[in-house]
Amino acid sequence: MTDLKYSVLISVYSKASARELTEAVNSMLEQTLPTDNIVLVEDGPLTPELDSAIDDLISRSGDIIDIVKLPVNQGLGIALNEGLARCRHDLVARMDSDDISVKTRCEKQIAFIEKHPDIDIVSSSIMEFRTASTEEELCASPLPGYSIGSVTGRRDVPISDDQIRIFSKKRTPFNHPAVIFRKSAVINAGGYSEEYHLFEDYHLWVRMLKAGSKGANLDEALVYMRTADDTYARRGGKKYARDLLSFHKWLRSIGWSTRRDYITGALPHALVCRMPGWMRRGVYKLLR
Image (tube, rainbow, N blue to C red; front, side, top):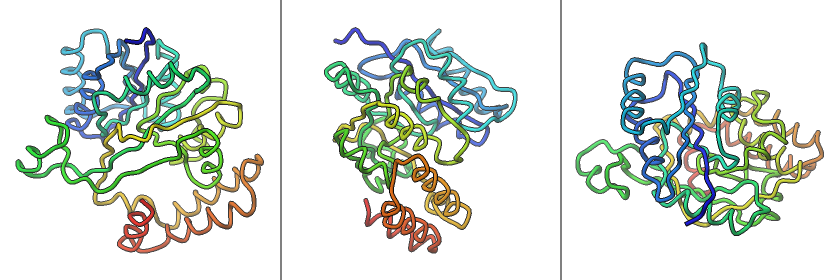
């Protein structure tokens, strides 16, 4: 067993589900390579249900969970920076408040980092799923005890650093709910930013790669990412397309991508964003 230790970084806000947050944190408490430091950022006041769920998690886990309370909602980038400052270890596992990690996730990722000390960021494939709505679905969950219903797809990402750099010119090269990174490398790249809303993670990954960090992805699904009926609606629309194009113009402005990348990557993606939801759903499934 490795001697390397890691922190877990989670941000939650008032619209989150108490049950889903409990499952997300439980999945990190049950890792085969346990952590001694989960930093949970409360991004603004929460609901009574979330407060109760967090109190229960703390009562069951002792001093493992470190709560960071922000007086008002600051947005994901700022919340994660506040939490990152409280992480006790250089290796940090990101976790969303509604996703579920398989029990061996951190053990496998940390072992990879230990074997490849030049790697600053590693994620994995993920499985997308819908919340179980019946007792039958709960009993059939691939992770017993978790509300995983129908699996709707698998999201793979490039494996090697060279492939990641090429891929990142058009699309995000890491599955953010499955990332483990070095805190020092994130800070060296300037930390999280709110400059590009909904692209906070992608923005950080590119700045890290540009600053010299190396990345990798494991060709195994180590996280189950929750999706909802409005997932494809949130990945589209006029504003989303405009924000996407603005982000890709930034990629060009720093010399990370080319005009060709913009024409063959960003513009087609923006067109998909303007499609009706049912059509966009089909395109995303085809790309998966």
